[in-house]
Length: 101
Image (cartoon, rainbow, N blue to C red; front, top):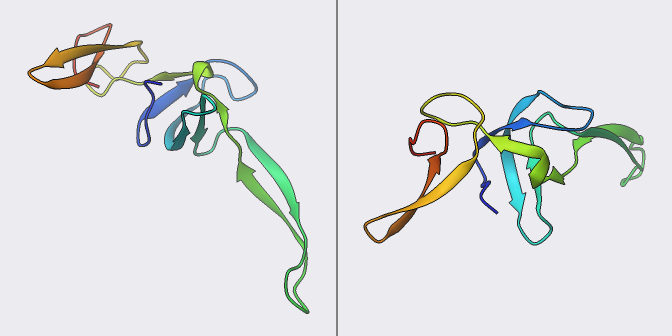
C-alpha cells in the first residue's frame, strides 16, 4: 500500500467524494486508511461510570485505500504515485510532475 500515515489524500468515491484530508492511520493488513473528517459515523456509547450519561459520539471510520488518491506536495494536485530508487533508498514520486511525494 502506497498511502502512509501523514499523507494528504483526496477521496475519489463514496458519500465524501471530493473531500481532502490527512491520513491519521493506515491499516495495510486490511487495505484501509483512516482519514480525518471523512466517513464520520455516529456511535452510541453507554455510560461507563456511576452517574455518567450515555452519549452519541461522532467517530471517523476506515475507508478503502483504493477510494483515495495522494495529493502531491510539489504540484498540489491528486496524482498516482510511482516508486523510484535514489541510491539505496526507495522513494515515492508523482506521476504528473515527477516530484517527490
